[in-house]
Structures are given as structure tokens and as C-alpha cells.
Amino acid sequence: MNARTPLTRPLYDRALLLHGPKRNEILTLDEVGQYGIDSFSDVDYLSIYGLKPAEWYARGIRLLGRTAVECTRDVLADQIGRDIANLISSVSKRTSVTVFDPFAGSCNTLYWILRHVPSSEGLAFEVDPQVFEVTNRNISGLDRRIDLRHGDFLANLASLDLPTGQALVAFVAPPWGRALDEVKGLDFRRTEPPITVIVERIAQRYPDRQLLFATQVYEKIEPASRAELEGTFDWSQLSVYGFNATGHNHGILLGTKGWTPD
Image (cartoon, rainbow, N blue to C red):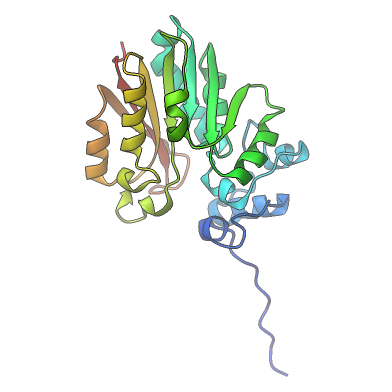
């Protein structure tokens, strides 16, 4: 009798969840844990909204495969929120702050920014109807109020009239898609849409505001695209966090327009 080849399961990695059959499917709790184990050796890797996977799943929170890959987990989102709050503290003491998230996804990073920045309110856009529907349900029971709107942020930007004098924080994290190359790094010019376009459009819409842009980055960045983006700011600072294995970490590029930190 010939030995039978053992059945194998798919590898729960970026390729399967972002580009494969699980892309548009709601993940089970086991699949969420398997993604954490297969990709990061951590069953609780995908902690969001201050909750471990078993906790958020028990509360009815759900994620699509693609959102699981693209969302920013708690440990990273928390640190991003802290760094933004520290930088803008001198501004937020004098005025209220609106935090934009043009590409909402799970809204987890926005949630953590709002937790750390005093007197802040969140405004997010999600163009994908399926992601919008799932995320809108997820955030309805959170302890931070987020105004999540279905639509394209840039298409709606002209009609966003905010109170005069209010400072703005924009968390700029469009889908990376083909912009991330493991060898060359993250190319800001190839995100969908390009990050420089988003920064320019927001700056043109609110030329008299104190603006802080927070761009999520990969540990390795294509140098020319970084220089181009930093050249649009009055001040900038890059931080890469050591939460993953070396070479696979994420971070934040902070840049201001209309003011410089004290």
C-alpha cells in the first residue's frame, strides 16, 4: 500500500488574506488566530480596540481577510497614538483637533489616536461598501466616537467645512497594494492613491490650519519617495518601532505644515 500524502491546510499569510480566496470573507476566530501563528508566531497578534482576538470576537466584532492584513494592530496603533499626542500637545492645549482617517479600514489606528489626543474627534472615510458595513458595526460599541462615512475622502474633501482655527491631524495610510517591495521597500509614490497627492490636497483645502500628517511606513522605504514626501513638510520625523522581527517592522513618518514643534 502506498503511503498517503497528508492533507495540508493553506498558509494564513498576507497572500492568502489579501489576494486569495479569503480576501472578502469574514474570518472565523480560528482563522484570525491561525493568521497570527502562521505569519507572526502569535495567536493574539491581531489585537484591536484594546482587545485580544477572543475578546473582540466575543463582542461581535468581525474582520474581513483583507482588513485583517491591512489593519494596524493595538501595539503599533497605541504607539502611533502616543507619538502623535506628544507632538501635538502644545497645539491641542489651545484648540480642538479633528483627526482624519481617509482610508478607514478597521479604524483601529484612529481609535488609538483619539484615546491619546485630548479634545479630539474622529472623521473617517471608507470607499468599499463591504468594509464600511463591517467596520461601522464594529465601532458602534467602542468608547470613542468616530464619524465613519461611506465614500471617497478626496472626492468629499471640498465639502468638509471644519470650525475655523481647529487643528487637523491626518493619518495617511492608503492601501499599499504593489507599493511594498520586500527588497526595495515601501514606495510612497505607488500607494493607491500616492501619499504625496493626499498630503497636497489636504494642505490646499486647509491652507490656514496647523496640519500634522502621520504616514504609516515600513521599516524599509524607497529613498527617493521618502525624500519627495519629506520635502513637502515644514518639519518631519521618522520613527520605526521594533515590534516585529528585524526587517519587518512598521513605523510612522510625522510631518507638519503651517507650524513646527516647540
